[in-house]
Length: 272
Image (tube, rainbow, N blue to C red; front, top):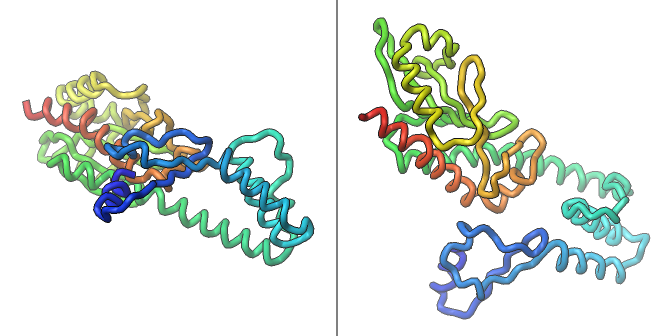
């Protein structure tokens, strides 16, 4: 929203910025920035949109296509707000071939949009990490590899790798590997270069990170958004859907948290 505020100020005219929200809550501080809050007008689904849809249904024929279409939106908003008084199922609103075609078009569009979000999130986050870090960072379809440190052993180079991954959820993990190869078993890494392995694991465990989980090949943890929520892409959680409006804010938050809480402290330690 800060960038919209700057754009309006450049025009040199009086202005207001309208923000659509579920229940009238203010947007995130990162999104507002330094803009004048008096220029911000909140429009909520719970108050404004729902009341407007109810008013629309009063003035159209109950048996018309328009009524069914408005009713469909009304049911969708109530479902989104988790209102208990709405018992109509969305499938009951599809009462014609045209409406079924429209529903299919919306479904296909939704599926395409959901496929774009993980790629866009990783792409934006990678840009932030590359701008702040001088480490070797590789972006792939559904994960990002960041090479933090290395060790030579028997004419081979092994790396401490930090990986940001989207697989159902967004999470990050540490492991040991050769360049662009899969993680070694941790028992194998410890056997090959025990001093380097133990030193890295110690530094990882001393970072200020969420609860760490241990698997045979990695140490990992969930990545959360500005509200402290996990991003569940498999179930299209609210935190994932909110990326449509908050991609810039969440990408910046995730990227900067990874840099300041993981990459910077680890890189500083390794250089010393």
